[in-house]
Image (cartoon, rainbow, N blue to C red; front, side):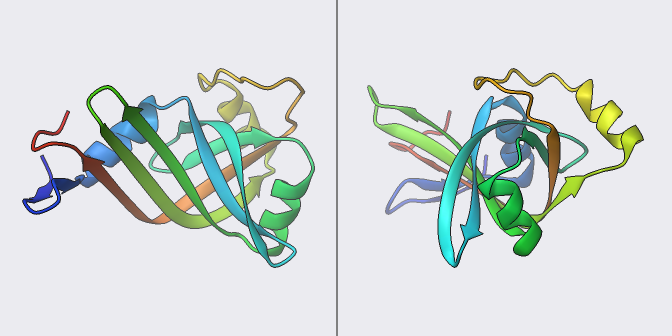
Length: 141
């Protein structure tokens, strides 16, 4: 269990809890800067040796990463019935994965894609900061 603020019941998740939640979430959002403005895109992803990887097609995400590789990535979960939730935020540097051996290895990862299309480019986010929070009524799930 992480540190809980008794005033707000906001729990700061441990690094281990953050990585577990990143690994079990099927979808997240990547934030990039496109033409000077922030944009956020949903992606299916996987955790690969303390990095985040996802596939995408050529377009705004890939173009933005090539111009400004510093990104953020977030996964979260909510339970509206008991008004609790959590989020994990990753800040880091993204890069297009281009080596054939690495692309072949990543292709074996278990990622279920929600969107159609080939998604011919792999992107890796190398984190510099990983933080997480759980908000609840005194007990973390």
